[in-house]
Length: 256
Image (cartoon, rainbow, N blue to C red; front, side):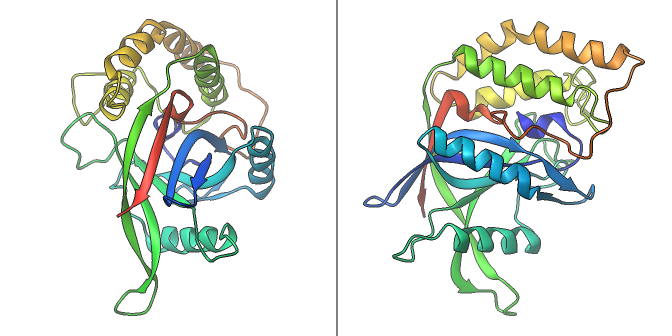
């Protein structure tokens, strides 16, 4: 969800558990973090990151990854993404050398996409180096989605995230037609994408979210029609919102 609200890159942390015996990471929650964005790439705000990590500790979860968006291009890691991922893996490495930390890249409006479903990749950096020795090699990860059911907290998180982006200067106008399809608005594209990625009970979340669509539309209308401006802020997102559909599902990830 978070990636669909901003024309610039967004960033956040993934929380869950790591099964040491099976080497499987389960992602239960995603938290939007404040970013230091240049418009081309963004870095996580350190103060925001520490705030989210404290929240994760209170939930008795672990920080098991991070996410960011490539708003209009494919979700393949750049050299900078590989450097950041490598640094995070080192930071969160266990005493035995295992690095249970993944990266997720979301591409909501890839200009070369042929359909409405947003693309994303989970990546991990191995010890192998590229032929030019410039960076370690990224590998894709296999994942499965487990439906946990929708809760009031899920919709509260969504509403809070929408509200915080209501006056963001580079916000995505969800009621505008998505150029990639030419037929549906971007809010509809978001819902179609959610349905496609939640392989278990996807119809349920799609229909339930459509029923709540009016609330999101009202928020977008009030923003687009308002002539007032909010207090100035140097950040683009909340450090406490659940940012993806992970608040209603778990993603179990293992290395390939």
